[in-house]
Picture 1 (cartoon, protein in one colour):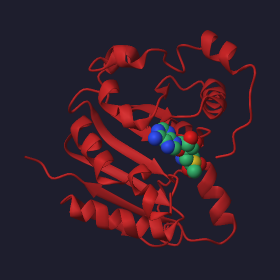
Picture 2: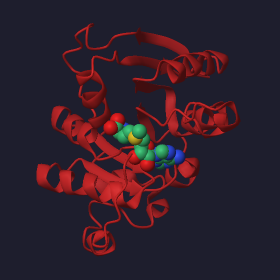
Picture 3: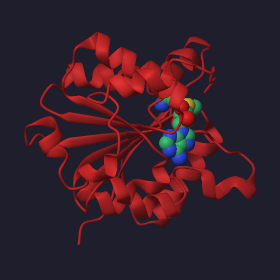
Length: 214
Ligand code: SAM
């Protein structure tokens, strides 16, 4: 994702601590207190500029959404969108997904979304892919038993790699689409990347993978 230096980002983050949560690990196991309710928690990893999470929060007001994004200059754009939307069921965290276990307790999350994750096509960068087994272990820990991982991408290579990675981890593949928009999912909320790639006529790949319970 293109990142511009935003000199105002630090000031924005200092003022908007209700949107982008500072010291998020302090809320590990207690995210329901942050939202003030016991609604299920859905997490998007690599939120980007926030279109998906805002759209989902509007569509599902009784779910709490948390977006994790590495880049400060990108997350402030997402935070502006959240602010404009007025949705109270969204919080953002500026963190690396590698630190997921510091952010959430075991079984705290109901559903996890990966949208258009960086493909890292070179073999030597396999460990950076967000569907590499090391990440699956983290997701499995924070997700409730039978928790869902919902993955969308335009990148065929990453999709194939991820299906193999999920299967190798003994996850159940419940829904696999090789052309999501052709399959007409009325509940689909598009991300920024999804709009860009589908406008070019590229198919969007999607799957739901479920971790096996005990
Ligand atoms: N999900 C958005 C979309 O579909 O429009 C953005 C996709 S962009 C290709 C990937 C995003 O993931 C970038 O904003 C990047 O900073 C973020 N990202 C990459 N690795 C990450 C990590 N390990 N932890 C958190 N965010 C990450």
